[in-house]
Length: 273
Length: 231
Image (spheres, helix red, strand yellow):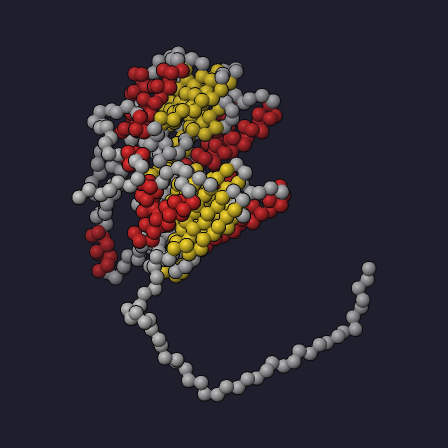
């Protein structure tokens, strides 16, 4: 590679510099690692009465879908929910941990948790691990100060936005929001918009798929609509479905009851006051 | 495109003193690699009632540094019994920046007003130096503004002149720097208090080769219903 006088920043598109080296290595039997995606489309919007969060339900392990219907919208507090993208273990662990901390805080203060408290706890934890806890979160909730929607990135930076998307399908979902979002949506319009955005991720991103989960949070009330939309039904070639013959033949049926429980009374000491 | 890259704020940040206070200005773009993660971020953060900080560089680092300084300044204000001075705020930022220089990547501009020194601007670039200046610029877009400020800066401007200078400068940098864009936010701090202003991107002046927008998304958003497709 020739050195240029001016440093050119990396451009988009495919970089062909290493193709010859890769060919040489492949001939020697060293194959490149297969394509890995962490997958997910998670979104959140602020609507007129509160917050709506949405997520797809596909969990991937490399190229394999390991869970076709996982839950990505995690409980933080009765009035706060958090969608998680990135490494599933990290998002589960960090949201569970902060959810416990919030509950302890509620016992201490005697008050409903605030979204900004959850935000600060998550942000501090993620910053301490310098991005190695790979959890990208969309945190939303309604507290005494109003509705709040935040995004939290693995390195600990946060943004406060009226609509937010995260995960590999975030660009597809953001395209929907940028063209159709407006302030003061009502509940049905909001849910429709969130479903559209998640579907855009489900159909256009390889790492997102299956069903759409929605969570609506308003002042004093929350609704977790698990599998609100199922746009990917299981289809069979034959319209009657399949029937499989029973595999194992029953030869004998013998029922053996378990032994009776024996009660043993020991001559123990009575408890002293 | 690397969605797991740490967020950096490409940024253009500016702090300018005028006769009676300071004006801080910034763009609003936060990028992750080539994707704009937040096109309307607020890079001017409050430290105390009378001192604000402009953040550039790594988004996470600068947010954490400002949170720490806000916490210490709050305690300091309580102990002192009166508002903190800009010099103390800037030095607290400098101490954190300098002592953690191996782990932090953030350039900051601290500006504010106090009753002893009036309006003051302190620049705290990457290594943790502290420089008191009549005006300071920072971020990736600032490279395009050094010559502009050499020519356009003058002492003892009025509040409106200073704000117009800041808005003009940020919009010039946004026109040339890919990592800066969105809207222009300004914060004016003087003895009367703090005023924050917002200049949407489509209202900024157009520079060389920039064209007026036609059929932009903003027209579609303002329309009443979905537009029918025309064959």
